[in-house]
Image 1 (cartoon, rainbow over the protein chains, first blue to last red):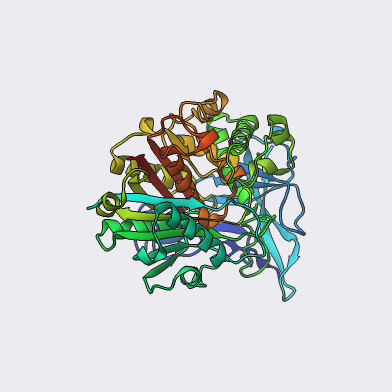
Image 2: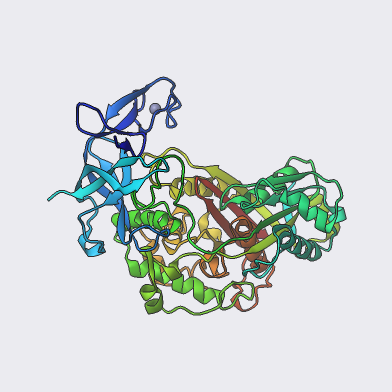
Length: 135
Length: 379
Ligand SMILES: [Zn+2]
């Protein structure tokens, strides 16, 4: 069985994958990953797990032409603000790596797929998330 | 509380010295700074040593083992690219606190070639190129594109920053590179992470820099002619920002540090004659014109277009050549930029001298994040 690439990607047995946030009930800040104290307002025990939206808008990006050995380039490294709160970073796929073709605030959707065939030392495969433009 | 003065300061010419050791590089700068102050290691009451690569290897003590084991307190510090500035500030703090009258601050780094950042093995599988990029050129490209989304800043405007800093470096004998890079060359260089081409990324080099800091009492005793007054010393960490988790924020901690530094110095950005700021990438320099209040928000592109930040302009930025061309030995950078500003305030900068310079500002950012700002004044 494939594992989630990060702890905040949830793969429920009986439902679709989703990104989990932890939201502070005092100030509304949304974090990725479990925590007990809010780093914005310092409240304790105000964190609630929430399912983040899988629709969002492109906030910023870079087109990466040089990376570490073995990493396929070019690709678009994208920062996406999810509708309703939370910001995540990932690869923007199915979009030409050309600044002329990439627009700020373009609507994107979070999709889930195999982690580009990457496996860990024990041979486990992984599920990752990607961004896809919404037409 | 006593005012604090820089009595001696110097740096080695940045370059690649794989055959040398970290303490050896640091010792060279330390001796240069001591000579500049006309003092000996025997006169120093404490040593503050900044280095990242060997942060757990007692670099400061190994420096004293090379140049004089006097038994003084040594503090080794690491704070990403703000490491040198942090060592300098610790030295400043000790004099402010009245503990010492004469202390030494050293920053040093020996770097490999190649990309910084990214990787982050951790558990599971590598995330580079899967969950975007963690390489430094990409992270700072994304920060620059945030400026582009707000103000329409162009690739060409970012590239002009690199043209300017490379031009400045032709006048600095201590810079790693001293070559002109015309706009077409910068824009057509290998693209690393759009909009940062290869010539828009700082140069990984080995280097060291050091400063002798003294109390007012000591400065008066030893002679004020070449002393430089430290008007403000500020370090901040990154206040909470909503995109923190995926997008390191170099703006908020810089704005906070700038605000506090101007207040401490009792001046405003309009009083500055030169600035050495953290141009780890061309995209980063653009952000800091606004973060440091050199112009209004949204005016940074115009500033570079109109040459206001070039030598001879309204407020020259990175006349040393900056990290882009002088080079960026992480732990040394924060003291090397203090050397640059002091050299102008002393009127000893030769061909690149900013005319009649009286007050200058240095700025560094360590991602993760730390911002260090110093304001220096001619005596
Ligand atoms: Zn909160």
